[in-house]
Image (cartoon, rainbow, N blue to C red; front, top):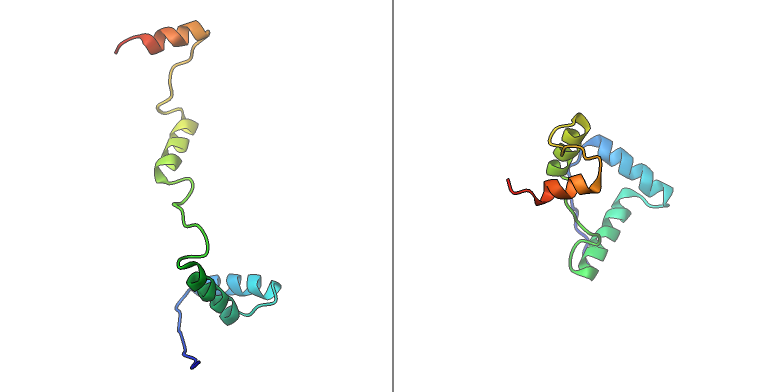
Length: 90
């Protein structure tokens, strides 16, 4: 099978960090990329789950608001008070 050259642009910090990880596993960067590509072909997609950043932006805002006390419910002394408030129509 004929070999071809693939060029990838990435920032040098990412390359250095990835190279360190792969070298610790006994791999060089080109070998690690070939493994990724072969596995992608084998599974017909990415060889790992791709998800939204956790927490996403909406969740991060909610956490920040909660830490600042923004948008929190009022306090209740008893469960009965809570239930009364929940059952009150606005």
